[in-house]
Image 1 (tube, rainbow, N blue to C red):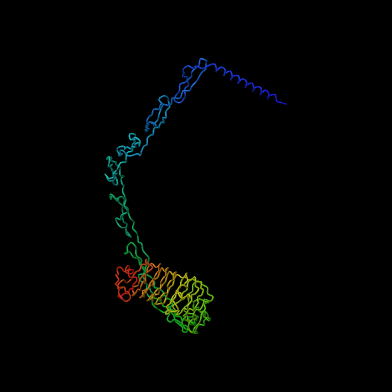
Image 2 (cartoon, helix red, strand yellow):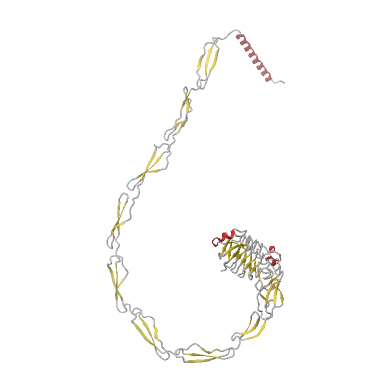
Length: 599
């Protein structure tokens, strides 16, 4: 079934189309018959600078034709800018239209004042106000002014015009140095100043005295009073004549106020005054003694007493060789016999000869050799000079093998040290030995003691070495001991061999003994850390490059600068200028130095 509304819409649409066709056709018929004839244009709406105008013309048939009139545009006038001032506004440069109100005018507001710092334009005094001014930085004609206060008077010190007395005020004045204004003030009267009491007449033991006090300023007497008699003031009784068992004595006392006033009294005879026991004969272990008491005054013998014999009092004693019984009263000795040793301790009296127990020993005739540490495990070891009453004269090979302590002391009694005696002492820090090498005649290097042919076996831990009994430091004795920092030489050393301390780059301290006579070639070559070396007065010869080649910073001091000459072989090259000996030493470092002055 069709919708009836659709049919109605179709009918309306077709009607509209028909009406439009009729109108178009009618217009075509009319235009073909009439041509418009318009009159002059009439201005209906005037154009402005920015908007169009409108004009019209009419046909007699009533038709109207319109046309737009173009806008005229602005007629610009340029106006220069006017700067603003502190108090009046200005404007930017702008343009405006002569026909309309169009304008690009921009106002610049007044800038306001920009005052600077206040400055003093008129100084104030104590009589007149001063003046400060500040000026506008934009216009110097604009300024502000303010008053400053008057200054204080510049017064002089107070000067006494009239001095005050005990009974009248005084005055003092001061004056302003600017305006001469004067100020005055009163000085109060001082009043009397009483002195201390002054003795007019001294009181005695038996008579009154007088005293007064006066004003210290005007000397007027202010007060007087009586001083009562002091009366006697006797001191302690003292013995003027001593009594005895045969006569009276006397004692006195004296007045402290007047020594002429004395009292005395009698001291009765005394009893015998017994002495302490006085010994006539001392008793002994086997003989009686005698003692007595007597009167200290008349020496009368008052009592006697026999002293019985003491009898012996024996005490067991010992020394390093024997044990014995000693009477503590008469020093009688009996039962003396030699020690019976066991590990350096007597099995009979327990006398301990010292040393470290547990070390291993080898007895060769009457002398001991230390052969090993045994069960000893301590940080520091001192080899004893004796063991079981006999001298210790040697240290065997590997005696300290793998010792993990830090210090070893070998005494001067040691005459021989076998190779490698200190082998494996890898934490050793300090070593005291009588010589370097097998014995004092076998001149070899420090490494021998640690089992090597050179010093490469010396442990890095070893920092300090002290020699105690040598006259000669062997050639290369400490050569390339790079880690030793201190070496102590005995006062017996006379010769330092070639390269003795060569390459000891960390050596910081060594003191040359006064006994030293010769320092051989390159003895201290490349001792980089050594800062000072003092050459004793007894040194007679210094070898080639002995002192400071490889260490130009070392300070070398000669105790005796006189008499030195330098040689090339046996040929004398020059005499050393003692005043410039440090420079001369560097100049002639490659020569041998000898002293011809033997003083």
